[in-house]
Image (tube, rainbow, N blue to C red):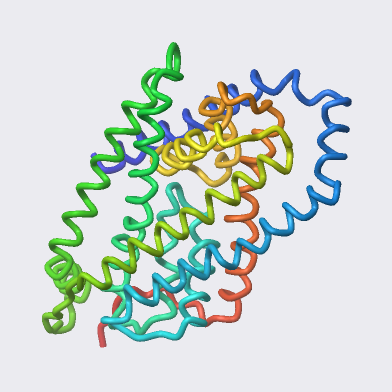
Length: 323
């Protein structure tokens, strides 16, 4: 039964990817003419364009620096690590997350910077911590979804309902995780460390910690938002505030639909072509912006993460071996 579920999940993800390729091809086949490409080239390499791109690059360490601080904050009750170590852990996770659908392998790289006996709890905190950022994306995305609901019709009418259902489920999981975090940590630790006695550990989210985690998640979301807007402006100088709801909706959809790394660029581009269709932004700038934000926020940090991993002693054990 489990193998059937895995096969079905893989089939759905591949179908989403192939459908995205089809959407991208149909929408862009007439948009990359010589004249349009030349116009984009001169726009990007103008002084304003180069300044926008430089600023987007500078936002990368800010983005992942905030994530590293959040990671340091949420893991501190289990094991204190420096901001430098937390940053290595986060960047390494970005790299290894590319190896599986839904970035399911990201935690394997993050936990190797912690003591083996703490890794079961750190693994749980990785998934719970990620849901703080996800909840912010869902909340802002729902507001945008209500605003742009009328734009979905025909073959895309199902998308807002599927995304809404996924978002509600994820928000409920976050609330449950916060409320039962102590039980979850101790239960997982005892299940994983069957060969050794594991003492109960008291972990609770203090109100100040929750406020910090949600606050920094909002700030990080704002960095993503600004970066995407600058990329749109980089390729199309006529972009205005009317794209704000579309950006929020884009982040919501790309966060909640199935992703496979090798198809991620196509899926992100297809989503952008759908949600921005009534904003006045041409298809070519949309495609370039969605691909560029993926390159800046995933591919470049992955290169940094790979560097940290090769300097680290590879040991992906989640628990102690039996003596």
